Image 1 (cartoon, rainbow, N blue to C red):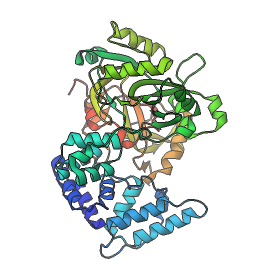
Image 2 (cartoon, rainbow, N blue to C red):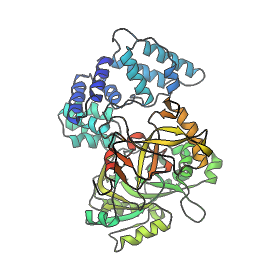
Image 3 (spheres, one colour):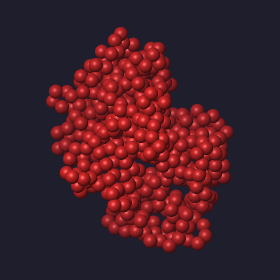
Image 4 (tube, helix red, strand yellow):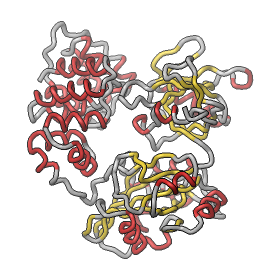
Length: 505
């Protein structure tokens, strides 16, 4: 299959808002792809190389200067192999060799193919083939149930691998995926509830536990071997030695745990989120001593040879309590007074509570209603699209942020407002430097950036507004913090913003 076929399909995806049309386009291409090229085709059309990040930046690609080819001739397999070669380069002189390999690749690509590759490698490919759409397309192409594809994806963690199994082996091959110790699962996600009473009414028997302002972790242990992963499935084992030691001491032989970790002050209150996240990027021993992380676990997915993914939460919680001891997140099963738990969580400096159905299974990677988060302060995770230069005491700093919500159909983020509130001097300085590093273009007033950063915004709901493409605008928005633990695909959707419209519109 030629890269030109993928580029044509990408353009067709971007040109339609119809989910049905997107699925049909993707399914047709999947059926045409050979087994050796199918993983790359699926990876490309979900917006990333099959190798993940290949170690090259926007500036390197912008400076290649390769004249485009007149006619398409690049095969998908050739592109995938070339990107694999680039990803494998390291050591002295690797930057030069990387640029040379990319120049050779781009010189064989047409102008349209060059634009596609540029956006693919910079993370800017937004043609509407998000994971949910691709899962349905794989199911359609392989003529298997969508739920079978979703479950296999949950367990494999990789859509290209899932697609190859579906197309070559059908439902039977998909059913062979199992939880594997040392291979992270995509985390189950929660949906917001308007109030504690609403959350309690939605479910019968519930578990109510603290919602902490920490960083999501998933830990795997088999014997003395321990792995720790972030919510984006990045391994951070080398950076969190104290967590590794703690998990090794748990009274079990093998376990997979879901939880939060955070740094605490001397009086036991949570430190700022950024301090917790700083540990994920450093393994320096002096920092380990200065800022220890405390884990709180809230789910158990495997214990001593038994997989618990399909067990109801009441069984998983019993297994959890049998193994984590004092590291159980505070909460109660079927509490008599859920409001007292919420008050205690807030008094301790946490965000609120989680209300979870005791009958629910672990739906990895999905944001359903089985888990509901209750926070007195309404926040959204949005994508930074740009920032305007400040005035007065903020002259010389990028200040007023342009904010976008995720398009659930996979298109570019949809702008929903601006804010300059909540920015400390330290955050202004960091933001000014960081945004210029991911700059896409600028005019006299604004630096527009690639949609890579997620920021948590506090707001007083939304209002109908023709000013922005989504038809809504944020009310009284202010910055809470940046979220380095989240990617743009984790941001809240335009539907989530519309759900906060005053009057329930």
